[in-house]
Image (cartoon, rainbow, N blue to C red; front, side):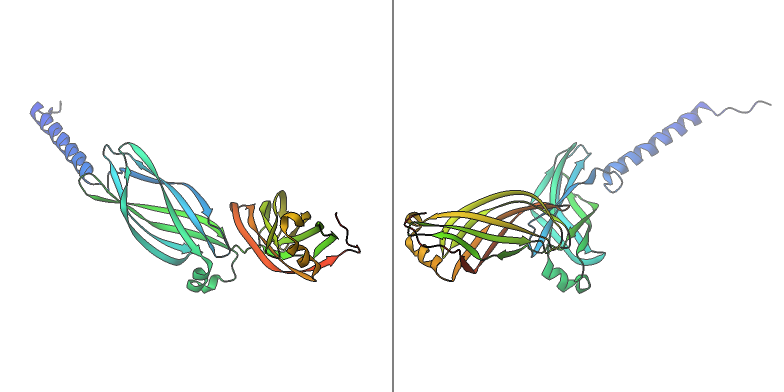
Length: 299
């Protein structure tokens, strides 16, 4: 027996019904930002900046991809920060000047997280004995479309960071090899000790040395020295001083048992956390050790 065929009119009605449903779905997707994914956020990179014995800043660099045909504007960030899985702080920041993400394009934004060790250990005292930490940021970015409708997009990022301790600067006694009315031949020595639990590479040092409040010499050194925890780097500066340029008062100071020394400058160090330029300085009275010599009219 032959089956009855569906009348052409029923077929057309069914086809129109499906077209209508598909059209409604398309309209719903167009007007429902939560379903239509116009914006995507990806972590482009992370970097530690402003490293010191007081703390550091973790910069999370995000790329925002706009897949839509219209421009979006970033108007607010809202995130919470966890350190070693413990909540550290929450921060909601409306932007005074919105950040534009053009249609069919992308924009980069930097999300800085400032961490001070004093506040970290005050807020989370259980972390006081830690030397390394994991920072998680979890939150949303809020955007506006041309119709002033908000769309929130979630993001997550993770970065490790260290407990950094400043290098210990130590002065050695001043070695005076020769001293005359015209000048002096001496050696000033100092050391830098890595007080951290991780190895750091000492790349360079530059700065100035003062004796008795008088600038006597600039200095600049480059290294490739890897300093393990507790290891030191000793630097010896051989100096020929001219009292006609520096003044006779410095000669008098070098004749005393002690002289005030001051050292200041910048050091460049590197580790798994990155490369950093840090200031260093120290000032103290150092012993003056004179070799067995007699005064001469010139060196």
